[in-house]
Amino acid sequence: MSGALDPIQEDLPLDLTPSSARPPAPRPLPRGGELAPSIVEQVLARLRAVPWARMRAKAAPVLRTGAEQLGSAAKLAVIRSSTVARVAVKRGTPYAVQLAKGTARISFIRALPLLIARTIHLFGFPAVVLRTAIQFTIAHRSGLTIDEVVYFRVDDPAAYTVYEAPPKLGTAIAITYLPTLLLAIFSVICLAPVLTPRVLLHLPITWITWVQLWLGLSFASHMLPSYEEAGPVAEQARVGVVKADPISVFWVIPAQIVALLTRLGGILPAVVGVAACWWLASSIFR
Image 1 (cartoon, helix red, strand yellow):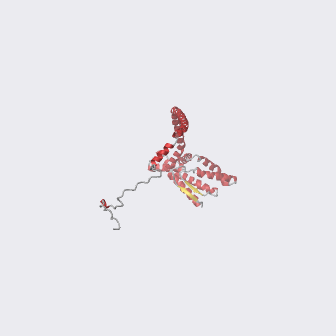
Image 2 (cartoon, helix red, strand yellow):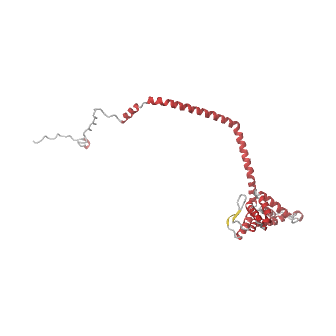
Image 3 (cartoon, rainbow, N blue to C red):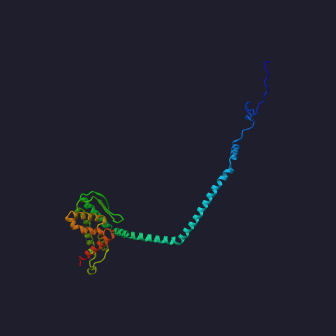
């Protein structure tokens, strides 16, 4: 026979092949014949090699000095905060209350004229709208460019018209003071029947009487222009006096007076207008 027979192999469980049933090959050893250390053992070895005692000795003085400085700063902060707290308790609270009261008082005093002026404008909104409409019509008919028109707002002034500066003083006077003349006439027409001697004439007081009184006072309180309207006219009249313009010479004093009355807001012009129209309407039937 040419060769020996293969040994008989028994059947393997789970249909394993002979190659898969062999045990794993052993891990080769390094040249020295010992196993290499693991990663954890290497990290621990390096940590043990660090000179912890020497580093601790060098860092101790620095940490001690920083702690002393931090303690001193904290102590100083506590002392100062306690002092400030005592001053705040003794002086701060009454002073803060007094300051708040003074600020509120000043704010109220400053806001009071504006509040009164807004109330007057709300009371006489028909006159505000009518005056602005008349002013817009005159400026438009004069050929001036009109940029913006506000017929009513809750402010002082309550309405305004932004238009091109008139080249002539006569045009500026018409735009500013022609509504004044018309509102004065309307006010007298409304107030005259109200101020008649109703007891002597046996005239009853009806709701029409109250409407006439309301409209008359509204027209009277808004017949004078605002400072934004009267100021430019007064300045244009003053410049015209230098140029010997006859209209400027005649109008410069009334324009300056109206500008002075309207400089502080709408309260004084309203009082002057109501007083003038009331006197004029009551003197008609005397």
